[in-house]
Structures are given as C-alpha cells and as structure tokens.
Image (cartoon, rainbow, N blue to C red; front, side, top):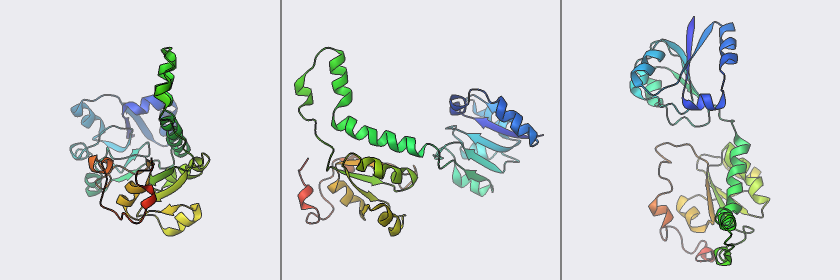
Amino acid sequence: MQRIVAAGDGVYMKFFDLDFFGKEAEKEGFELFSFNGFDDSEFEEAIKDAVGLILIDRPLAEKHISVLEKCRIILALEVGYDFIDLEAATRRGIVVSNVPAYCTDEVATHAVMLLPSISRKLLALTESVKKGEGDYNLAKSVYHVKNKRLEIVGLGKIGRSVVPKARGFGINVSAYDPYISEDIFELLVVERVCEFDDLLRICDFISLHVPLNGETYHLISERAVDYEEGCHPDKYPQRKGDR
C-alpha cells in the first residue's frame, strides 16, 4: 500500500483525529501515516517511501527532499508555502501545491478589525480600564479612521476581500500590486499606486497580503518605516505631515 505522510504540529491543531482521513485514504489504496516530531533523521526515514506529503508549517528543506524516492506531490495544507524548498522539489519533478482559498474572508476581516482597534487604542485602553485607571490622557491621540487612506500591498484574494470591508468604515482604499492587471483595479474601483515608495508617502495604514519570498522579504524595513524621501514630493503634497 502506498504511503502518504502528514506532518507538522499544525495538522494536529486543525485535525485532532486523523482517523477519518486515514479511512478515506485507505479506500483509495493509500496508507496515511502521521508524523509528529522534530527529529530530522526520523522524519527523513518516515517520508523516504512516501508518494505524497501533507504539511502544515513543517520545514521541508533540500536535505529532506533529497531522500524522497517515490514522492509525486507535496501539499501545503494552508495558503503559505514558504517553508518548502520549491527549487529543490522542482528539480526532483515533484509538484508543490497549496490551499489558496483557505480562510480568505477570515484573514481579511481580522486585518480590517485591527485598523480601528489600533487607531482607537483599544488594547491599551482596555488594559487601563481593567486596572481601574481610566487615564484620559491615554486616549488623547485617538483619531477617526474615516477618510484615512489604507494601502493594500498585494491585491490577490485576501487583498480584494479587504477592500469592501475597509470602505465600510469610510476608509479610502488604494493598492500596490505590479502583477495584477488594470481591469482588476477598475472592477474594484481601487486607485492603483505604481511605485512602492509612493505608497509609503501617502498612506495612513498598510495592509500586507503577499506571499513570503525573495521579493517580499523585509518589504517593510527600517528604511520603509523611516521613509521621508525618494518619491515625488509634488505628487501628493497634501499628505505630508497630515497625520
């Protein structure tokens, strides 16, 4: 019977009992083997004969992929897949897949929830009230989110889901995504920002919805946080110092 290995602590957080999946796999002629541990040598021994791997946040480096003798597919049971060495898998002819539609609305809702929470200092004020302090000075810099500008970086499934939710608070929305065609921006009625430095210049909030890779690693860096110059100062003169 061909083996499929499920590994990663996240598997057991989402599925406390894998018996159901094991029985379904058995119907199709597969054995579902669950690996829960961090020892590399034990992990490599468990996966070497597997025809498929199902992973959640379980790092799969080139050294692991090199021992795979029969594997045809590696499934990241989540949206992100940066913990898998794609180049090593490609060289071995192994397909890497993910679940791109997982929790789209939930992540977008959480992201938008954080905007008024931060701007209204919800956590800090809640802790103050719990301590019986009620310090009014803590709330003096609380401000409205209405008419503020949110810049979405990455106008994929989650980024697009953020748009109408943010607008419900009266927030102005624009986006930066060099890989999305103009018709998507037009369909969403979202202003396109073509240069990342321009985005830093005009935004009040930034919401990141991009995969982690070499291009996006440290996209928000010390330079970005301390950004003062580098774009076109005459393009958005009304934004400087208004927040």
